Image (spheres, rainbow, N blue to C red):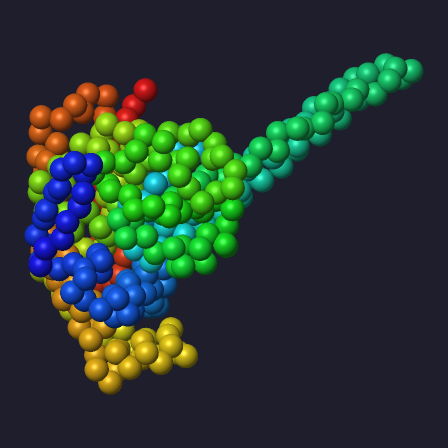
Length: 334
């Protein structure tokens, strides 16, 4: 199966084993939409007792832990967003945590000010005026912004997602992860200019689709045009990763009627002619086989300018007993 990505005057062609979810013209769009809906479901829903939290929640927490307080310095640009994927959940989880953290700091500050004021008043002369503290004017919104992009924009789905938060945006034009414009944030759907923050590129369950030449171009672009990037996968290239992919079929067979009740087309292609779960399983198997290790990702950047960059990687169980999420993060220091 072959797809084409344009880079100005040049054209980059690549072969991929499985492009059902990436805009392939050979796969009917109505079925592609149903497959993408299932992938989004697997990202954002928690399936007890096998999951303590959704994979999207796990990754959002991981991103916060890796970046720490500096997370507020970035604007996050998601590439190959598909129908939206986990990015709206990332935005919700991270901004909720930042808001709670801001409220806690505010209350701690107010508590400290009250204690100081009582001490000042107790030590003031009997006929003197009580001390007056200046009001706290530190009410800045701590939220950060996320942007959805894709080579094949899913504007109707993105509009619905972005309507849920003022900090979630999309770019209606096709965006090539190999060659992003310098003024990328100015192309968003936001009616107001976004705050000038450092760009951070996200690849959520997407990077494994790129063959090596294209993956090198994507990383080269990230190193040149961003201050950080993160590659998140929900599988590993291992027997446990393949087993997890096989289990996606039974999971969707057991739960699709509940999550997609009323979408009779989806249920038809899930139960009467089970194309959707079969494609999800096959896509998962190929994704596991194509997922790169840390060493392989570092090798793709051989010869690139990486001075001043710090690279971290890791993994965590998102679904008991074999579902492992993996990540590779690059952060430009200074």
